[in-house]
Image 1 (cartoon, rainbow, N blue to C red):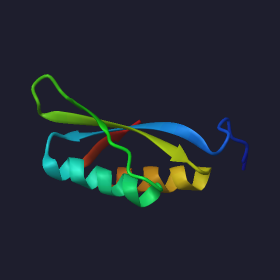
Image 2: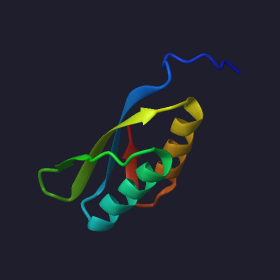
Image 3: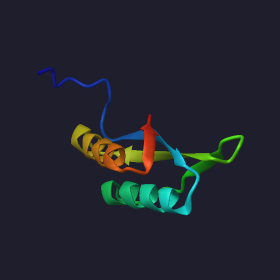
Image 4: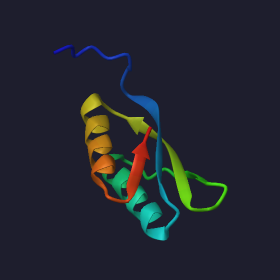
Length: 85
C-alpha cells in the first residue's frame, strides 16, 4: 500500500457536501464536521436554482490522513448526504 500523500499535514482542506435543502441536512453535516475538527467552521451555503438542494462548503484544518478518511466515511454514510467533494 502506498502511504505517500500529496498533502502536507496540517493543512487547510476544502470540503463540499451536497444534500436536500433541509434544516436537518444542514444541522447533521455541521455536527459531523464538528466531531472531526477542533473548531466548527461556518459553512458557505448555496442553494440550487429551484431550492431543492443545498451545498455546504467548509475549509477545515486537517491534521492527518486518518482524520480526513474518518470524516469522509461518516459524511458519506449519512442518508442525508448525496455527494461529498
